[in-house]
Structures are given as C-alpha cells and as structure tokens.
Length: 304
Length: 285
Image (cartoon, rainbow over all chains, first blue to last red; front, side, top):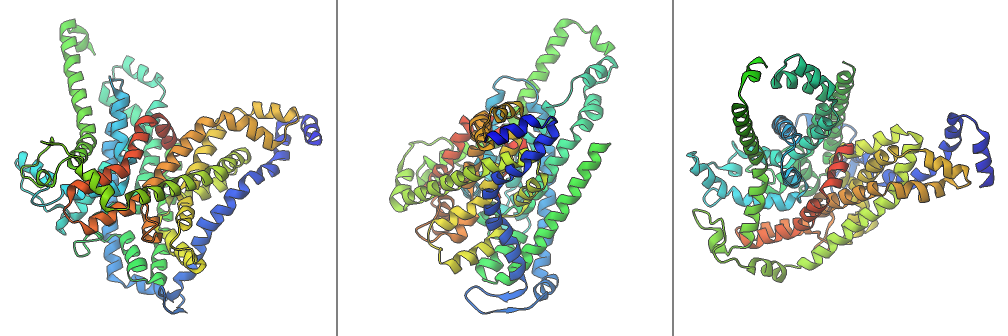
C-alpha cells in the first residue's frame, strides 16, 4: 500500500501515473469478462461449430461443412423470409424516424404538464411486449375488434388486420411504430437539448423564418443524433421477434414469417439446430455489415 | 419580419393563442395512441365477457367487476409465475450489478474502447441467436427445468446494460477525487469502493432500473428454456392466449398485472430511465 502511494507521488507526470495503474484496473473487468465469455462469446463460436453439422435435437449429428449454407441460399422459404424482413424493417425505420423527430421537436418546447406527457409517450416502449401484443391482438378481431369500430366511425371499410396476408405486415409495423417511436424521440430530444443557441440568434437577426432555421441550423446540427437513432432503429427492427411471434407466429400461412420467426421455427419447432445455426451466422453477418455501414456514415456526417 | 413588426399587440396575441392551441392539439395527437391503448386495456380488464364482446364496443364499464382478476389468480398458478419472474429479474440484475459496476469502472479508467465495442455487439445481436448454443449446453448439463438457466441467459441482456450505463457515468466523474485518495494511501479498490462508487450512485440506480425492466419484459429466453413449473410471467400470459381464444377479460387482467410493475416503475423513475436510455441508447436483447 505505502509503496503504491510512493510511486504515485514520485511520478511527476499524469501520463506516467495512468500507465502505472492501467494494469491494475484490468482486475475490475475480469469477472464481467468471464461472464461475457461464457454467455456471449462461447455461443458465437459454438453456433459456428453447430452450423457445420447436420444436427437435430435429440437425434444424430454429422459433419457437413458448408452444406447448410449452400442449402440456405437455395431455400426459397429463407429467401421470402429475407424479403419480408427487408419490407418490415424499411417501414419500421421510416415511420418511427419521421414521427420521432416530430415528437422530439414538440417535446423540446416548454409547455404545461410536459413531464407527464413525455412519460405517457414513452410508456409503450417500457411496457412488457408480450402483454401489449396480447391486447393488440384483441383489437384486431374482424367482427368485435375496437379498431374496426374506429375505422367505421371515420367512414372507412373494415380491415382484416392480422388475418389477411395483404395487411398482416403493415399491421405489425403499426405496432412496431407505436412501440419504438418513443426511443427515437428520446435519442433526438437528447440531441436537441445539446444544441447551441447562438446560431439561432444570428439567424433571427438575419431575418430567417422558423422553417429556414430548422432546415439550415437544427437539421445539420442534429444529424449525428439522427444517425445514431437510425442505427439503433435499424438494428431493433431487424431484431423484432416477440410481438410477431405472439400475435401471428408467422401467419397467416407464412405471410409474416420474418428471418427471426424462420430461425425460431427451424430451431425449436423442427429441432433442426444445425440449419438454424447457419441462419444465425448469416443473420449476424447482415446485422454487423449494416451496423458498420451506418457507423461509417456517422463518421462522415461528423466530419462534414 | 417587417410585416410582423407592423402587427398590433392584439393581433399578435391572437396569433399566439391560435399557435398554442394548434401545438396543444398536436401534443394530444402524439400521446393519444399510448393513452387510448392503456385505457382500453384497463377497460377490458374491468368488464364482464358480455360487455367485452358487445358491438358497438363498451368503453366505460357499466358495472365494473373484479371477476377477471379473481379468475387470473384462481385458474392459473399466477403467484408461482410471478415469483419466478421476481427471482429471475432480481437474480439477473443483482449478478449484473455485482460484476458490471466494477467492469464499467475498469473500462472507463483504462479507456478500453475495444471492450466497450464488444459489449455493444452483444447489444445489437438478436437474443434468439444465443439460444441455440445455450440451450444445447444446458441440456447437456442437465439444467433444464430449473430457474438457473433462465437467470444465466438473462445475463446476456442485463450485463451489457449495466456495463454500458456505468462506463458513461464513471467517465463523467472528475478523476481528482480518486487521485487524492490514492495519494493519501488508498488502494485502487478502496478508491473505487469508497470514492468513485458513492459518487456514481445515480448511475447505479439507472443501471438497476433499466436492467430490471428489460429482464422482466424478456420473453424469448424463458419461453424456450422454461418448463411447466419455471415459466416467467410473460411466458405464462402468452400461454393463456393459446388456450383461451376469446376470454378477453381475464387475458387483459393478466396482461395488465404482468406489465403493471414496469409501468409504475416508469412513472416513478422516468427521469432516471430517460437519462439511462439517452446515455448509450441501451435496450435489451
């Protein structure tokens, strides 16, 4: 103990002190590193190993190399799942981004009961997804659901919602928008709070109107935060599982079978874990590529 | 600008009033999907089956009843599932705090951004992708049918949240205080335990709340790993749907009971939750 204290007082520069201690701080990370290794790194490596096998739960397994991957790329069911995931993800990114930006701008104003309004706005994001999904399912009932009653009130024809192949994905996207717009709002609101006020004063003197100030000051300054929100939204939309599984389980038919549902069915309904592991690896590669691309975009946005 | 300057004060006030009303209306539009949804959930849970399947829908219960809630407790092992959920969420959060708070401190002190990036990758991968290998492992170890595998898999969610939130809090602390403690002869563990940790208590609160909520809400790990006796609440409530197609009252009552702790926590601790979510954009697997 004393020796340590002496070394500190002896080392004059801050840098040297930090270097002396860096080693010791490593011990703080060890327990977490062990857990991360066991529950996060090990599964990744083991997944790659399993994906090279023809492996059925409770059955025989044999080494097949890349066969699962080759099979995957000629599997039309997987191809359709990819397309549906793409469709679902694009819609589930665009709408929450636009609405979240609008909501953030609104909540950036001071108004009475703002705290309460904001809390209510973020409730959908915090609520238990399964519980929420069950109540949504009840509102979609074609004859007795409250949503068709609402449509009738504004003079629109009733919809089949989740019970028709044409409307099931837009309906699920609607829930996703309801669910995750609050997170986009919070991330952008955090950005708005950090904006400097000087440019606005300068713009006011120059006679800029509200829209011009938004278009030429707010939006560019906000860009880094919008990109972060975009990255998080893309990843979360790709990860969507709970709501889809609880509400449709991929149906009707396979009209809402996204990659996650396909993956779940392969692994835990057909017990085809080898094939499912290949899906995990491909899916993970896609997510990682997307995250890298978006992070790269973020760097570029920061520079300009 | 010039036109505006010529306006009389009365005109200006009127314009402002209209603007305020329009703004208030748009805020109302923004929050109404959330309000209406939860009110409808509440309404369904307090109505009898006749009102729930009536057309046009009955919004305010004619004769509010607690029968749905009684049925939830009578027909299902609801209390056991609630206990399972409590054990899993508190267990996974407790372990995550125990190992994640020091880890966050270590990473912040060492500026180990690569370790932080690894944690981030855990955040972006779908929870489903951890399930196959961990399921095989637990089966091989013969641990299925107990709560232990569920607690362990929930660490996939809770540890990244805690570490991520704690990194940003420890990075925000002024280093001078710990340095002073070190100069006075404290060990780095003492500097962490008696100087940094008390200062980071707000951060620990944020990490605890978020980690608890995302563990409580998690569905997929327990759905695959739980046996009949070890279901957590989200799994139990999902099973109710499968067997009781149109018992809307009891189903809504159960759904409300499952999500109530989280909603109450959000109402009480919204400040901490907002701070935590914006700090790193964390969310469960």
